[in-house]
Length: 406
Ligand SMILES: Cc1ncc(COP(=O)(O)O)c(C=O)c1O
Image (cartoon, rainbow, N blue to C red; front, side):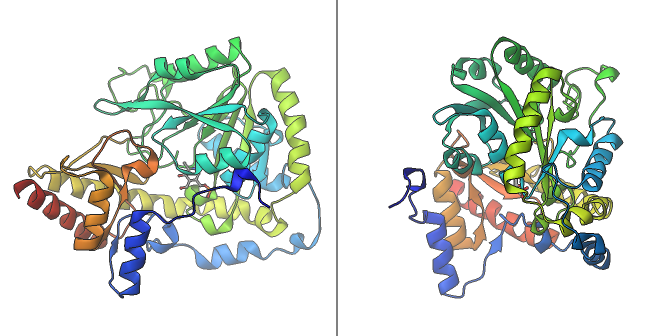
């Protein structure tokens, strides 16, 4: 009856089983996977948000495959503030970045073609690729005092059916940004073969250190030097830059995102014309949301400083604890909402996660959920309330040192 692309294993994983057990017994737990910003106590201009959704212009149906111009102008304004010129004609509004990925995959790839994605990264790529009949190939990020793209390995993975290389900027959960020199390699490749870049920038506003303009020519060793400002400015390779309100304004419930197309003139024109047909087939963004977009985007000015304060405070406090010689260390990160902890290698990541939940009532994600190539690593969200974060981390540190001393 069903398409083979939906033949997923629907058996719950070990961690979900333990969560269900605890819930059934009414046992509470500290959720250090919490990354839903609407559950983390940030103050929003509730009245402003509600009023933005009530707009008499929404009573008229004005279909536009790109999404309403007033909304796209607001998106262009967001990039202009970062010094990047985007023409509203380059923008398509979508209901989520997931939908934007699907549009781009449908545009670029035939069934059986492949896209290259970073490993470790965002787990949804598996599903997005499969739903679009694509094969997913990965290229490694390597860790040495910080994460970097293993460019040599990436080049080796490209084959004649590779249609795009995906970058997540900064990546989830490693928090690393793409370097200008890595982008230069990708654009070089795209000049030799039909290869597009797909850049997911949903966390781009959450850098721990502000980006340094390339012209400033600081030494590469300074963390933020040579960081790509935004792929939306890329003009040498056909590039699709994805972002949206779920992280920028911390309103995932609003379901509003976009894709910006840039690149060499001829390819750009062809891509826009074809994407227009795809987007016109769905016309998925509703008028009330499109009219509200300028106000919702504006609300980032209130929420982003609160989020940045929270993640920085949690990270600083974590570092203070780890500097006391704990059995746990953390991996370097440059931005985003997550941190990766390295626990003693006496257990696998899955064993650590299930034991922490069973015995200590702390929920974390094992690294393999994100395809982390190392054992005994856990992913922790930096978004939870400070008190909750501290309690959870203290329990992890206590358990790790008990295990090590056992
Ligand atoms: C890398 C990355 N891209 C996209 C998203 C989701 O974006 P959206 O809500 O617009 O689909 C997430 C959510 O966590 C993410 O981590």
